Length: 375
Image (tube, rainbow, N blue to C red):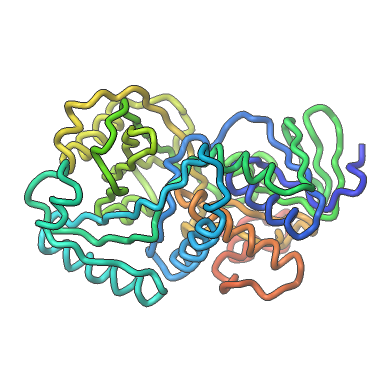
């Protein structure tokens, strides 16, 4: 069948796909979103909104996107669980306070304000933290939200979006074949379904990066800020092996969401007790009282990682009519609205609001569909 009058078909109803559909619909386009509800990174992730500064492009997109989230936050229903709780980047000792100062300078150069917190002030702000930490860098503009509810809200917020709960099995130009045999045709197709995009476009240079998370029972008031160790970025961008880093997030329910781990080259979704134990030992090293709290559920998910850690945003160089919004790794929730705004601007022939070059798919993909990904 032909989806008569459809301007864009978006594959993926996670946070990135929903943000894309929302942005297109706001511009008056008629959008069909295809998703089989099998679940992905949106339902498995932490939902943090954090300005990451591993490189200038990552910081530019995350900072821009956080501002877009803030602009939407006043309209979000309570179920989206948006909170401007801020992040405390924790320094284990005086040496890591030097890292905090460097991070503060980097963020400030891009318009992100940060405040250095000494050890005594940190202990007053977060008394659950172990004694002896060197201090912290506080980023007040960071926040959290509940991504599944937010994605659903974006899909319903403006008219012009139709959600089809089916599985896309093929993409040929601006046509999408569904498992039912139906074919959807539009002006453009946007592939935004994370690691699952590899089944539709095998040439995409995406690797699954597995992560474990655990959530506690309700303990209101124990933690006020998102807490992250300063070594988190090194773990987040490790290219091989298994790594863990301390990251605890206070949920509006009073629960504590504990992360994080990263594993390449496995697509086994089962919980791995040794990895989970290693992650929790890391967390207890910063929050000793966690050992006395009741953990009620653990789970895993898969981030979609590109070779340079940045998303692929823009038209596929070898597939006219096919656009990409994939490869966000652990920043899909943070950067979803900015990614959508960049893709929509490119589609419309507008000047993107930030430099688009670092995210263009052509840095990895050739103009030949046979050649596929560049090595």
